[in-house]
Image 1: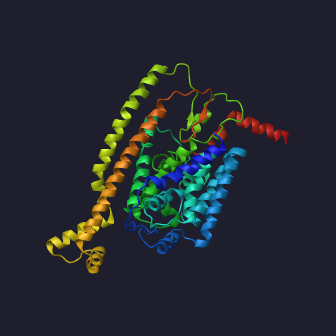
Image 2: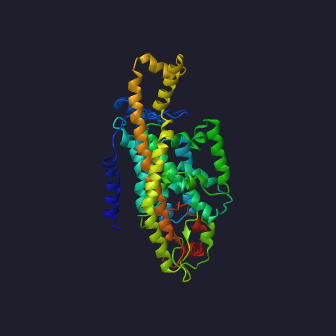
Image 3: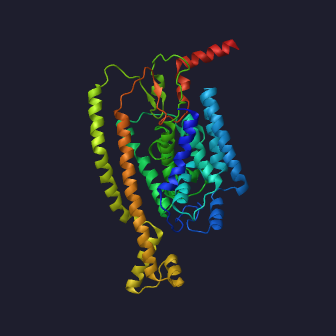
Length: 439
């Protein structure tokens, strides 16, 4: 795929998003764990000011953070593809933990910026700053040409897991494939909740930002500690089985013609790279005894038949799940609280209820607003159900296709560009010895 074609794909992908969505207006997401979240529904100047407060640094330095992110991505590509140095990748990762983690505070990162973009697309009163948009787009742009270099040595959530993975163990293939579906749900739920004003759940349940900020709810700190402890043995558990941004990076990486080449020249099929890969991203050579073409073709035909039925069933299921999901919305919760108080003649029991009843706004007006909110959430849940069905079926199609490859190769959508395979490849070691002797 030519560079021009990739650039056009990147531009059209994001240019088409606003054309596919309807605009709606919702109050700001409720947030309780120390983050300062952009306030959906505020006037542009107030929302912009609130958005700027997300980073624990001055607004003027936020552009510097974006520039430093660009430098980190460039250095990551340099060490991975030019120098082929696992040590250089690891040093970059350590630097990313220090800067993007402890200095910047882990926010805003591309993972959480998914919600900012979703809220801005679905709500015209939610402006998004160039910094936040740039932080969201930059790693995706690099993934389009160089794979998931952001995951390998730049992301503060991924790099901290990379550092603690001392005794990696293999996850059973079937279990690994099942668990990799979870990020699809998380991505869809994060977009749905941000777009409808329910909340920014990806940031609320960020497991590692509490460590970087030295504060946070006990539950989140415990979950983060548990993931890090698990990460000593299971490589990057959050990245592989939870991270919603990794789904987007994987999709863009599929278009990248540049991939990690395990060996610099000739593959001797020693399988050492396959054994050391922490995320099972190395595909073995295809063999002559693989399943017949007819069997693969029958399975693909069956999937094509099931595709519309699965999508329809998932869409209907999502639509009916919209009602319980809507109970999480702050306006729906307020309406239920006010109705319950008025039914028994109680005084306001919450600050929100007191503010509403003191404002003199008719309950009928709140009811009308809540009805619109519920309708939007039902529609969003229906779309989410269809999205999940299509994404899962696409993965089944991918597993069903026949691969034609002679040597061990990296699957771009899974590879996190950590460079571990460089350190075990005999041909890589041989070339390094030759280079040193030549010097």
